[in-house]
Amino acid sequence: MLAGTLEPQRGRLKISAPIVSDHLLLPVLPDFAQAYPEIELDLDFNDRVVDLIDEGVEIAIRSGNLLDSRLMARALRPFQMLLCASPAYLEHRGVPQQPHDLPKHLAVRFRMPNSGKLQVWPLKLKPDQLEPIIDTAMTCNNMEALKGAVIAGLGIGCMPNFLVRDALFAGRLQTVLQDHARGLASSTSSGPRTGIYRQRFAPASISRASACSRGSATFQKQAPDD
Image (cartoon, rainbow, N blue to C red; front, top):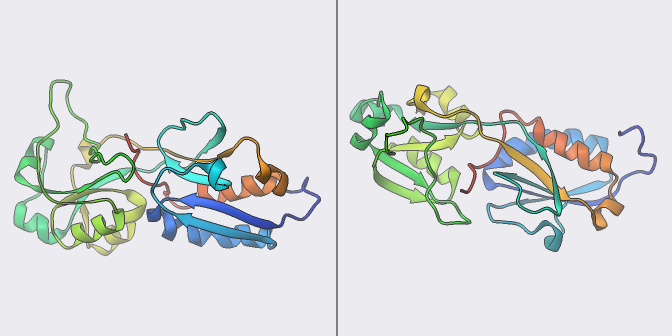
């Protein structure tokens, strides 16, 4: 596809991505910049619902289902939500072995920026089993802040694997209840089917930008905003 693009691609390419994705997206951008040196990347990191057409966004990276029929989407690499806590917290409170152990613990909860709903933890429960009721130590709408609170020992938090990878490797966090967690989640890169950007940028450059995001580690954004 790149070989078929005769005219050099130039101009500004606007990409909207979740705040939490910056440290994953940035390392793969040099490959894109090398392939398209005359394209200026405009990165907008935010967690709100973006109107791609009205705001002139060429690519948006989000999790959940695509609801706008004016957009086309490509699946990105799946990710997993992990329940984590600090070693000091687990030493003090104990390590939960089953979901029904969670009421003995404290939760650090994530509030969806768009809906205001609390994130549902990805627990595998029996059909007749209710979600455990856990006392909440803190609620916030920023995953980086949530990670910091969990590392500080406030409680158990649910975060994407790409966000906590370094902290797990360094021993600042430990996973809990991995055998009782649901499987992988998914995200997409989406963009308008038609519009001005299709005239400014060949499909090759759009595809390359999407490919860069697909290749970014165990990437993908925030949990779906149900």
